[in-house]
Image (cartoon, rainbow, N blue to C red; front, side, top):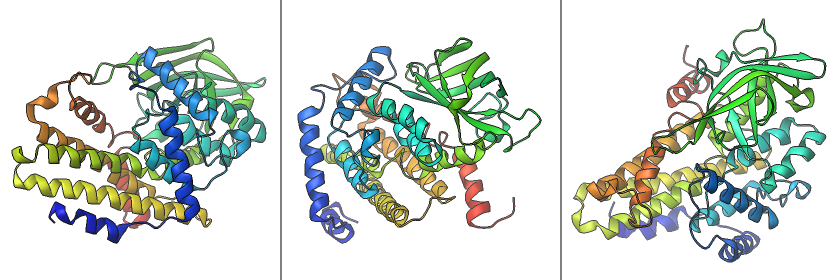
Length: 395
C-alpha cells in the first residue's frame, strides 16, 4: 500500500464521535495546553524525576483528570470508557508525562472498585488520585515469575494483623513508591492457586527492605522487597482471605486487556514513526515503506479492537481470557515499531542525550519495549492461555 493512500484509509476506518464527545475532547485538549509542564520532566525512575511526576499527578487531580471514569467522590468525573479513551488520545497527542501512578490508577483502582469495601475505596482511591500514595506492584518472586501460582511469601493472620515474610522481585515503581499491592500465601498448607490473599502494604513499615534493581539504562525502575515479620493490619486485605488468585486475575485482566496500555500510546508511536520515516525517506530502502504502513495499520486495528471492548464492557460484558490476545498484540507491536525506528536512524540511534539528539527517545523506548513480552504475564504464558481457554486445546 502506498503511503499516499493513508488519508483514504483513515476515512474508511474512522470512528464517529457524538457532538458531546467532541466537546469533551476539546475540553481535554485545552486543559492540557494550559497545564502541561513547560519542559519535559526528568525520568520517573530517578528520585527527583519521581517527585516531579508525583506533582504532575496532583495537577491532574486538581482538574479531576486522574481517572475520569471514577465516581466524582473518588476524584474522577463519572465518565464512561469511550470518554476515557478520548482522554487518553488527547493525553498522548500532547506528549504529556508518563503516569508514575499507573499501577495504582489503572490496575489497583479498578480492582478496588470491584472488590474493595466502601472504607477501602474512601481511604485509598482519593490518595491514589492525588498522588499522595504512589503504588508498586508486588506479585513476582524469585521462584514465581511467569508462574505466579508458585508464590511462597507468607501472610499469617493473627490478632488483627497479617505477619508477612518473604521476598518480592521485579516490583515496578517500588524504588520510590509509598505502597505495594501483592499476593501472599495466607494458608500455609495450600498449594498453587489456592490459599492466596491480596494485601495492601505500606512500604515504610518496620521489617521491610527495598533494594532497587537497575534497568538496561541504569535507572532503578524495579526493586526487590524483603519482608521480615512485617505487621500489616487485616483491614488491608482486599476481598476475602484466600480469594487472592481470583482478585489478582481480575487485576491482570485490566493490565492486559484495556487499562494499562491504551491504544493512544501505540497510535502516537506510529504517528511519530511515520514522521521519522518521512524525514529520512531518501535514505530508507523501499521495503521500509511497507514496515511503516504495517505499524500504522496495526496501531489503528488495536484501537478499533479496544473501542469494541469498551463498548462490550459498557453493555454489561466482561473481559476474560481474550485479554491475552491484546497483550501479545500490543507488546509485539511496540517492539516492532521501535526496532523499525532504530533501523531508520542507523548508528545515530545510539546517541542517548535527549536534549541534544531528537532520536534519543527511540533507543530508550526500544530498550523498554524488550520488557513488553514479559510484564503483565509473559507472552509464552499468554499463548498457553489462548490455546487452552480460547481454542480448547489440551494442556
